[in-house]
Amino acid sequence: MSNFSATSAAKACAAACANIAFIKYWGNRDHRINLPSNGSISMNLAMLKTVTHVEFDKGFTSDELIINDVLVTGPGLFRMQRFLDQVRRIAEVQWYARVYSQNNFPMSAGLASSASGYAALSLASTKALNLHLNDRELSSLARLGSGSAARSIPGGFVEWYASETHEGSFAASFADPDYWDLVDVIVIVQDAAKETASSQGHVLADTSPIQPVRTKGASGRLAVCRQAILERDFSAFSEVVELDSMLMHAAMMTSTPALIYWEPVTLQIIKSVKKWRGEGLQVCSTIDAGANVHLLCLTKDVPEIQELVRKIPGVLSLIISQAGGPAQIIEKAP
Ligand code: PMV
Image (tube, rainbow, N blue to C red; front, top):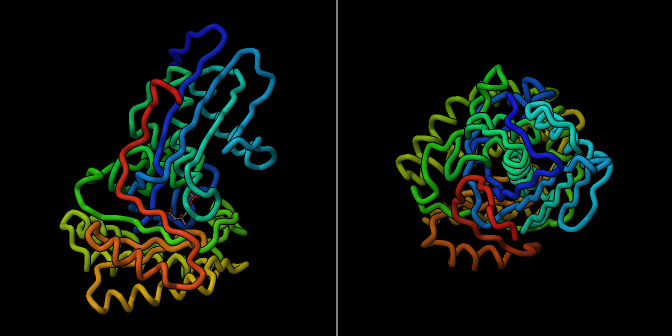
């Protein structure tokens, strides 16, 4: 039932963090509503944020989307319109919206800008239309915009449950951001848009002979990863995180058409990290749908890791982030 009662305009602003998956989401059981083929675990990234203002107005004649001061048209706009149609349907409102979104990190480089973007949009648009969704409902809604956005609604260390229903597939936090002193050193080797967006990649996942094996073993890896985080066991954590990332990239590389996101420097970093860990440094790597590499480590080791990784030719820059909190309404919009 809608509680919406504004007469001509309604607006709100929200912020959300991007997240890095430790156990990956790749492929859907239902593409229409992003019901994932397997559950996943991630950590929100405090330093990678999207702030989104949404304004619905009776007088607007179309939806408008501006990201980082650039007007978005075509598929990016249509995707947001399909998402807002769901919100309008729940609120029983037909007004168009203006959405103004700012990311503080490179877009479309495998850094999950769609996760933080759709989490912030879910919160801001439902607040503007006076829909009081709980965190679980908000996470399921965000999932409709971009699967991994479900994980950017709660804070800290998060698990997104695979389910056969829309209501059952949401993400929830199992440890606060300060539970474990884990840091993501994001090694940027490419900051241009990737060739195949993950939304297109999910559709190809089932063409890979690796995908059934990957999804079958996911619940075991989820349990190991959750336990390793809860016990702050870096050794168990690094093994399962690297295995899961490799399994996802194996599925990507063996799909039809093949998706190869890595650049030569990506492999160079993966191999260096293995060598450093063999020498006693607590560090492991994971890669999303892009060439950039996420190095996971503890705060105490960040200076040494930074120094080592900067020496690798082809490394453009680093972004360093600790675990971040949940998506939040910004009352005094900047
Ligand atoms: O939510 P999407 O459609 O951007 O998919 C995210 C896919 C990966 O980043 C590769 C893995 C993950 O779990 O975040």
